Image 1 (cartoon, rainbow, N blue to C red):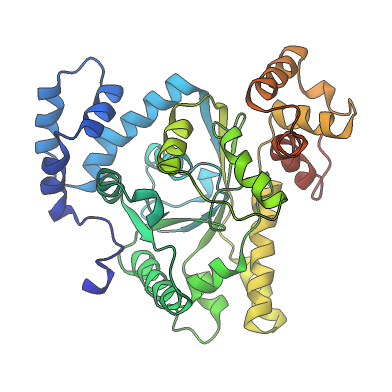
Image 2 (cartoon, rainbow, N blue to C red):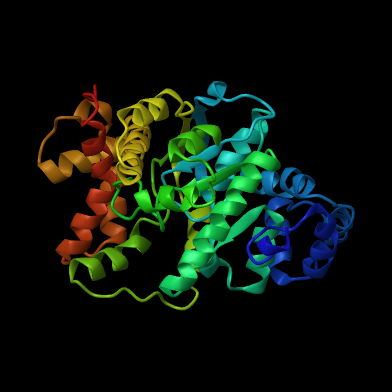
Length: 378
């Protein structure tokens, strides 16, 4: 088990010591004062000193923090599909990825409320370089995906990660959340990278990878925000890519994005849980193609599930109509909703910058385009 020490979250036996080390940290004070504004510091510090498991920390602190985030920066979280899941059962949730922190935290909130197994969740180690954030991630059952490695190191790291995910799912009965590709979606196109599936399969000892994927119970997850709280923050990278430039992040950019995601206005949020890809995997296996082709086909199946179950909001239809210079979906939003969206666009994007303007609108419009591939939108 020591081979996982570089990437694993804390064991329960390590939780109390870790909490005592950070209980006086200014960022812990900020988190607790945000979550429990009426509670004196001595009271929550005493509670932390009595906490001895990740579950206790998640239920007593993180869950309460999420409720405050939802109360202050959203019009609420709705869910569907959780009836597809069984209690005391682990699943591999493969999700589209819009927000660094919220996607997985909101999923765990819904799993907790539905009395289901919560997840261990992948997070890039580049996001937790600050010592406090690293500790907080490990307290919240995040495991690290190592970034910035040489090809040889990447191969070794991917195998270790795959083995750890397999261990969680098959031996600890712990569900796992992983994004369908590295990095958040910047343009509204949610697409699974087959490389993620190849990585997941590296730890398998099954002759046919599809048998392993069936065993670990893959569940596609669609998460959608009416307003992406980090929409404008994604523009510089899109502009760099449009100009064939290498995008270099500003110092502390990831931390600011985490804050913006948590505190920025989201309006409504929806999470849809798909069904376990059981029959679909059997069908892929029956075709008898090469392992690589099977993986590409499975990636497409995951995309089909995520895109077809993605919840569309008025903001998506407004952006689609603006981009296409039409009123096709005007019956699905009000004039007030359109005015609010246009005001947001005006405040956040320089209208003299066509690349940024186009990118911002595409981020909201593309989910409509993608959904139309599966069925007409009313």
